[in-house]
Image (cartoon, rainbow, N blue to C red; front, side, top):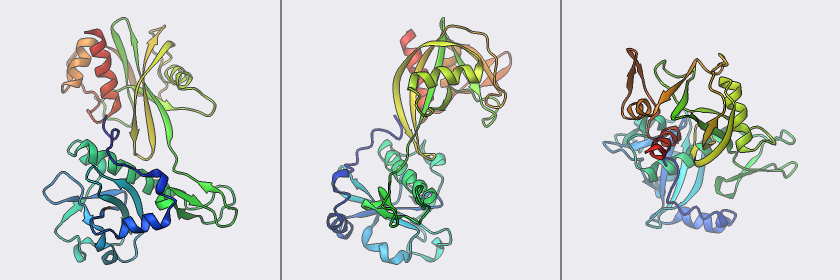
Length: 304
């Protein structure tokens, strides 16, 4: 699953060992990955992030955030991530001619699963630090701790940790068909699974049933969890389900859904293979990097 299955050894038990983290940062083979404005820096003519020796860190001057310790890769190379300020001039720096910053969304179909997982971790952490610089308990400015994986308030000593927002994403099925929706935020021809945030005090299955009814007016009974995916835009955990409908009449919430309809097995297979034509209208499904694609593929295989 894209963004999952990363092979970094996060060494989470050593993040609070300042001496160990300093030793890793000073190691001659330690490497940096670089961000600016939430965009990773990709190596020139390569579908991979630039990994620069950490000895180059002083050449960046004052950085916005980091270094954050990500862990060690398969070759036991320590990896850190830094975020440069928005004003940093690439053309007059060590990075000149070495590549460019690019949106992770634009690159995620091209890069390896290992790099995608690594960059997803870094992007989520930088976003969290950028949004949570002040203590939620007393309002004081908080400090980065544990190699970038914690913030501590110096005034009230409250500890803050990176947040993850759970989302239920479900394929509603009934009698060999499945229900997909088109969001007002999506292109008109793009249809995908329904999804919604899990609320406080709510189970995954309860969220699934509530969201389906709220968005399309369909009742569901059984909800089977089939997988999950970290989604670093900025920090969701997408929990995939197959939900069995007990009613089929659709009544959409126009604020959430522009359109919803039932699709056959053959139509879904064509959508996942590049699109399908129904009554002279083109329909497209989610890309392979999204868990929605894999939920739909799982359903197709279950009917084979």
